[in-house]
Image (cartoon, rainbow, N blue to C red; front, top):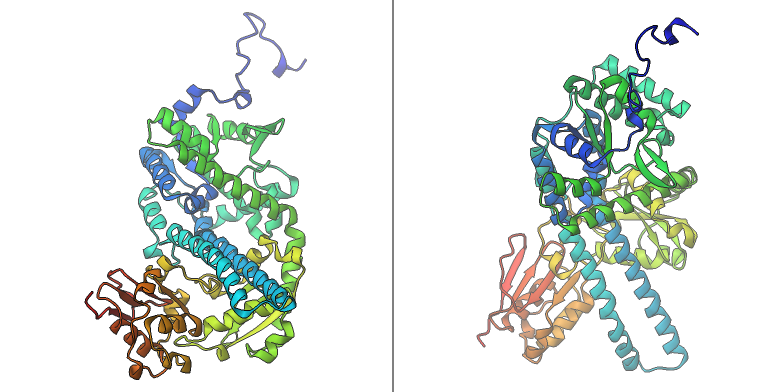
Length: 558
């Protein structure tokens, strides 16, 4: 037996408890969590911060309340701040991205059903009137669903602007985290930490080896977070509670599929470096304990919302991790194809060539990639885009060209594929509302960011069509506006009550502007016409519309 292992010559040899030196094996007790919540350092990782954009408004405010209650014990590593700013815009636009995708799919389904009905009507010699009745029965359901999805997405994403001064989530984060962000590493320490992080990735030493596919120094990101946590904990001589939505195996210890706590290697490394214990919680459990221990206001619905966000984020992360190699190759192939194909115009002769082809669509404006999306088939989607570009100020369909990359239905159903392409190239029109064809009645008068498509290219009420010059009644003029103008016009159903009111036909010159003036002159004085950046509303309601380029109110007294 070596001297170092020999028992003392006198006195009892067993002077340690079973847990001494093995504290990192112990499960956290309720008393442990109470102690670390009240006395320890509470650190947030990147996804815990970014997911604030994905919570409901109520859940987010309650989480902010919990974070404020921690006072000076709340802290985030500098690397988390780096990754937050790198990914903030993507997180802020998630709701709009997926909302727009759902709306586009609803519009595709509506077009497919309409085409099937027209084909059937032609085969059975159904009259035009009967066909229109059938179409009028089902169209409102799709339009209503699209509008509600967009209105909901608009309400939920309001202010999540790429303009930092208009982003309420960011503004509140800045206030809550003021003075609570770690200082950056020196250049020398940073280079050494990156080298160590990459070594750990290669040798599968936690944390961070599951990020190997990120490439370059991105694979070292988790280790940079970890190294900064260790440094801060040593300075404070404090236990740490890390709040993370990352559930990968390089952070957590699992038994029978259940998360049981931090990886033993991390707990051991932390104990050796700091001399105290490391605790980790996912956001839902953190909120539960904050309610119990800190007596914070946290509703059951908030905990449910935190679970929802975590499950959605985890599912997408797992899918991207599983398929990242295949999708990356496919994504690069598609991007190379659409960017190098000869550009085509939005004229009929070019659209007819791609009429029935399912494909990835790329739009180019001023020779730059402006938009990426799916077309099921491409021709229908491109015709809708052409319509949206018509009747606009500062742009016309002639200014835009397209290319396509034919794709299978399976590829076109893959959200990860298109989101990956958008994230890589960041086409501006994917980020500014261009892809949403139906604005939604409430969204039509919502406050828009300066870079929104409708603000850059507002509708043009000098748009002219001879069909607007022939109406004789309110109903005929309203119908003509809806059917013949390329942008959306919302007209309240109550207009049928005054539908037979005559309009001054002599005032009509075929422009939308004179049609709107003639319509206003024939409506009761409690009606208002508002020409917003992306749509026109005609409603029996008076309201302030500061962003409207024109507001007209009814002239007739009831």
